[in-house]
Image 1 (cartoon, rainbow, N blue to C red):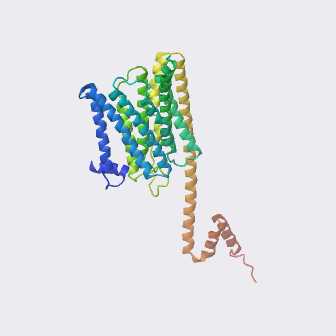
Image 2: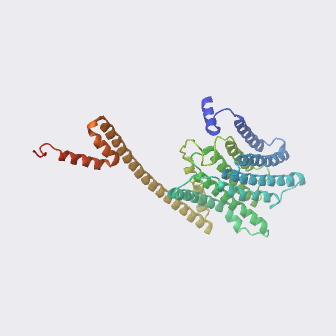
Image 3: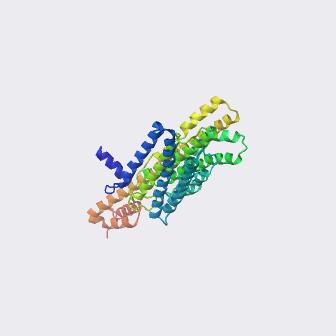
Length: 407
């Protein structure tokens, strides 16, 4: 067990010698466990839960923002530094929103209205984080690879959009209310969450194979978890069913912890988001190709639920969107087959080139052992083997026995 644990640790953080990184991860895991237990057990009652929840939700993004700022400072004047600086700005914005929420709920007392001053910070995270994720350095991709990334992103975004439409957007758009500001803020969250998920998918698709898979997975997974919690918060708020201490608050804590771990893995200087990674060994990974298909499972459940409810044009939209997603999946599979055929052709061509090279090396070694064929070796060095062979055959015919003219 010790060997396996050490191997996993070295795979993320490099060789042993600086174990403070692993200590921070263990502290984050313990904090997540404590938060989950507190939500379930509720020691001290509901009032203590509100205090603990508000303080924890303010400290967690602030810590993640500090970690991201440290990465930005270390990698300043690079794309990685600028990207992490924007992510840090977004996290500080949401930390400020959590502080504003806590002041209204704990200091002023009473129920926090919607929208409130806290929503300024909550919505303020989206623009800098969206740009920051897209600004992350990416691996150079060819035309077919670029098309594959686009199809994968479209599949996931279309599936997530349909799920969000069925669960949140359809009801909010059809809901009539006199408070247009509240309706606008409610609609802004799911659309902004879809944008964050889109940026996270692009980061996964364009990340190089020499970058840390753990860092990319934690960063993208953190913002995906945040988007899910935000969407659930919007839905529960629209039906007046959200209160501080709800189980969805744990999703935000997990999100901030994953982002902090991603920043921590980059801070160790063992991994890099830059393409100039020196002699790091490239490793093939499968999980980025599977991420795009993960939303298809909940989409199937939503499709069945929409078909069973038979809500008119809402059901037709979900069914039509599901068919469109299926068409995108088929197009992606066709592209994969074409890429495999093209790769097989390239491998066969490469094998032929290697075979010819080996034959040439064998012939050169034979000629070096036979001094009488020195002129043939010189011809082989300057002309193709076929021409050298024809020259040898012609020379042999010219000096064949019996063809010499007698005096």
